[in-house]
Image (cartoon, rainbow, N blue to C red):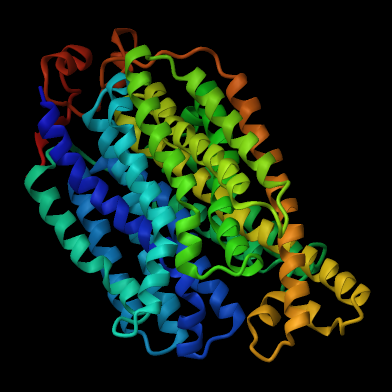
Length: 536
């Protein structure tokens, strides 16, 4: 049986890899203006520096998950880390915006693997009932990277002897440390299966369909209208590819996304809850930082410090909630409380304007962070508790995929709504103040333009702070869907074994064998044609 110390040692390498991949997504947000200025990129290019990573992360997640059910999880984690490092090097060395976007896309492929594989590896090491005990560590790594990334990016850009390229190069030594620890401490079962066939056609269809829809989300309402022929072309082709992918998945022996898993009530509701939570929480991390910088006039570094209450909420809720969950084994109450706190936090943020006292904003952020701490990992845990060990990769990556998809949709759609609100209200506010309304066509650019007259900038900054509450109101409504999904769950108790119990033993043929007499008792003997060994 693996000891607590051995588990923590293995977790350390996994969480360092997860930390650096998450950090790469958030550290660039505050450095983006400097990057675009240095490489002489356009606003569209700036959007793609962020979107390229989100797109490849989301599209590659199901593929990584399926590969984890077929091959060595340790080797896959190491491969994803190497791919991520390669993308980081390319992005840091880029001399034009196209190469930078390409490097960011490669980073996304590696980051998608790490974000899925870390959770999959944890699921293969620790029984669901005990997993809550360690969930706080994972939430802590994600929280520090998510909230601390913008702060670190601001510090790097503001330090003259560093520069924006260190936003990418900083990840290299951390990744090397992660690879070293993983090699020394991570020992997971390796599947040996005859005649393995990977559904590359289905993977291509899923990746293509998702990519087309994400590209549409990134450009709709900016480059073309919601009701345009371009929208019809993007949505129609994306949906058609995904429909064809679902048809293929029903006919291949090793589907990328096993459809019977999605048909389980607990899994389907967890996916719906993750989609809602992802849409809400990703929007919070992006737009609350913009609120502090654009409307309240704080620097990137100060903005990062002001978001500490959200990080504290995530850390405390995940640590305390994880330990209580391991004691009780009842996961539904924690999800109910978490989604409720998330909704209440966004409801509080929906009331802010450009004069709201910072302590009130901090209380709302604390609620949002607490909600994230009690839901983000527990939705994954709920799904892992519901499936056989042999399907844990596909099931885990599916939840991660929908959470990432929700975040991408949230940032893109909420950003488009915010831009239109600021533009329309900005024209009204400038007109009522007797000022020229031309700056309202692109208010964010006007706010950062040194040539913009002070009175015009002041009006637009106040307008931004006054209308951003609408975005958080939408987030609260979306988070409310998460509450409804959780309430529809049947009471679930986390199992104390790595795999499903005896009644489903026959269905678990081909599952990986794990250390410990309890696991052997649960799984019985390997199926014919299947052998197991430890990772080297």
